[in-house]
Image 1 (cartoon, rainbow, N blue to C red):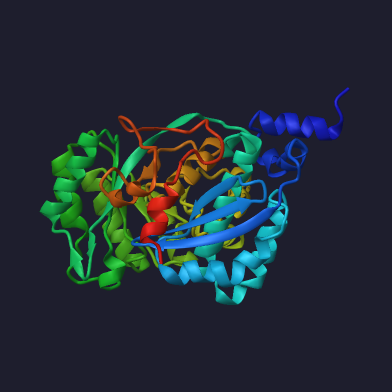
Image 2 (image 1 turned 180 degrees about the vertical axis):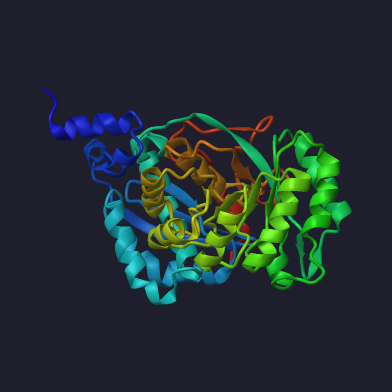
Length: 398
């Protein structure tokens, strides 16, 4: 008869979502020579931060750290996190993450520290996969799906205070449909301009996009925390009733859970939230008090795949579907793909930034993982499945 430990490993390998939180990494690690982490490095290139973890046998894992912060994120990894991880057993992932999280808590969470730790944590999952010859989804506990549909996502924000006109947004949305995406989301970026703006771009932009993509393509709108509850309800009713918008993301300010709950109770449209939650504890409070219909965790902002597993467990226990926030096309997109493959409630269409956004980052990789005809196939190769070009990264890094 199989032992309890054997049965746990067997169930995890079958993809039993929440049970996989007791992941079989210690069992699998018995097949290694107990490699140690020799070195943690960070590389800041334009519009990205990459993390490299090298084991003492020469095996390498790579991750990506965050959406912003530049050299500050890279320096935080070098000055604060590297010493915690170097010399450690790479299979002590949960303990290492907890130590790093609490030793940098006064630098975050919710900022540079979260992004930095997220990059290191994802690189460590990649390293473990390469040490064991297994894809990350297998280390998480197996997969519920080997591929999934994705929607194309873009922002009105062009940087430096410039924003797309409704006509420009309509053209970009049409391009995404031509790329094969089966649904489109527009990030309105109104929080950056002003909360509850008098000259609100949401409805004019959504109308132009709907005309461009037709009535049969699902349309989502991300308000980016831009409204107070009363205005969000007004806009949400128009989006749903007039334009058939099916998802209204972050209609109210982050952490204003009572306002989100008010909006959710008033509207028939699906309310999404979670991109700006940086801990599993915050997701617990969001679910209990904000009452969104759909959760949007981001493994970078959450400080990695390690705590993202806890959010998946919360989603499972509270019966909440997951559609990840995924705005980066390379290593973070790969990390999200493995998470989606494993997480039981990630059964919805997932986000992808498309082939245009940050396309310049692909010069740092020897292979690409992109959706085809609106479907993303999860890699089966060891680790996250991407092969960085270290020479190219080092040539541009600071």
